[in-house]
Image: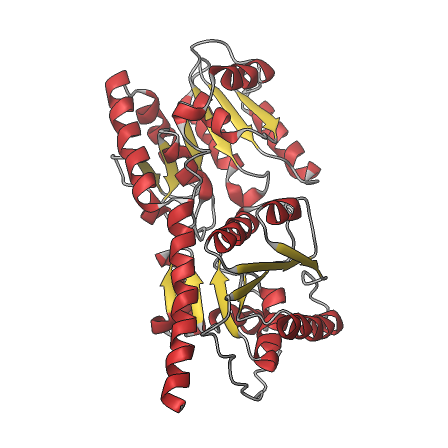
Length: 401
């Protein structure tokens, strides 16, 4: 993975051709990275561009194809050096065969193969940094650094942009901050029927009128489920229901740990692990307060924006991108991370809002999401980055001519 000098190959003349973009992502199973890939694939087709996606596959491939994109299956999720070398050759062949102009890498292992393939085959290379990657192992910084080496580097928050500059010495002039976008056609209170909400309420056995605290997110320790359980114990109310929504994804030992913590505090009637949910807009409509308790700083925080899009008060840990997404005391509250006492105090404040206060907060939150954090805004800004790269290349060609 050392920075080996490679031959520079002239980019193609783009004046008479439809631009072609190939996104490279480890898989298309589930998650924010995958959702952004699918959204961009659709936006490219809508803009009249050709859209290709390379991944190891998954159920979201169908969405790429339905949107008019094309999918190629390669083991780009692999970190095996031999597989990565083979991926480089295959990606370079795809670039040449399909006259690809821009290769957009969204994860580290695929990016190593994609960067070299793009250079070998004469395509532009763009990256998106989605997270502040762990630096634990000695070579981890080098492994991560490929994400800061695009002709343009898209950061999903200002927090991530600063991290790329400070940690990987990324060129600030090449970085473009583009927040993740929420589908406001999906996350819209006016579009969620009463039947959908009633169905979930029945499935989760919620009594009418009982205040609901909700933490959406897969069951993994850094998502802060234990912090919320401890906060509920400090809150000391048995007239509230706390729903922890998310799959354990095979982490059965952590789920048992959460169940033991609930039992320790005698919260069995208050805190419930309800598993995964296929209708998050309806789930959020049931919530009086949504909690985002991550103990590690996040690059974005999709739940924070989705909750606000549904007009729900949000309480988020005060680090990472949360500071860009929540306006304290206007659209929600920020609390010190990993602090059950502070979280309990914020829960008390949120649950005490009267009807007028809740409506005012909801209006502010919904308005801000629709102004700043939509899928349409994300896709439009990303297309602008692609156009910028192509225009720069064309200008260089004109100068050379």
